[in-house]
Length: 201
Image (tube, rainbow, N blue to C red; front, side, top):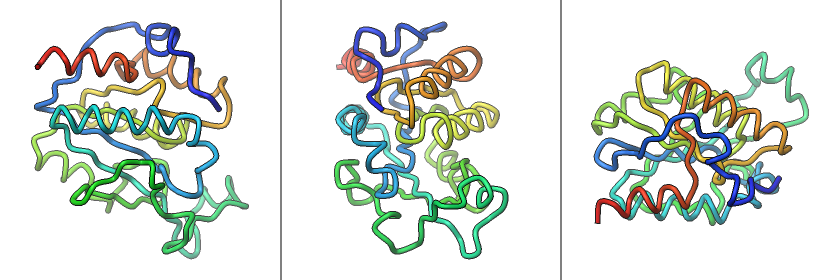
């Protein structure tokens, strides 16, 4: 699914405007891995740009990978009976275009929420002094949205990318952006982040 056109990316959904604070933010790149390669492809240029912009602003980049246990957890196994992402398989590996660098934290999870018990994500963020998260990756309406909602509830300020996220259809993508903007996150895109981080130079 192609991300929204540049002219309608974040401004179409924006209800509140704020710039991320590079000194207090982290970028969460959600599940940009082999299993989701076809879904990720249209947004990959924006994901790579978002990663580069955040690195340039001194923002730590954290990746998540979905890996299914054996046996798979309920109710996820009931909902996605035909999909299994096994540890050590190409489906579980981060895509080369995701921009991972040596030293980047990679968090493994087995459900939609990157903050699920046992991932250590919240503890890692708190330890780095992070107060804000920028969310990018796949799928917009599942792991990205659920992680963003959970981050908000845990007290993090959330910025949600309109062009560096992707999912199965434009309707699902836009529904998430509307929900995020209504009560959970500031909507951004690559152009907006570039302008925001340029202010500090």
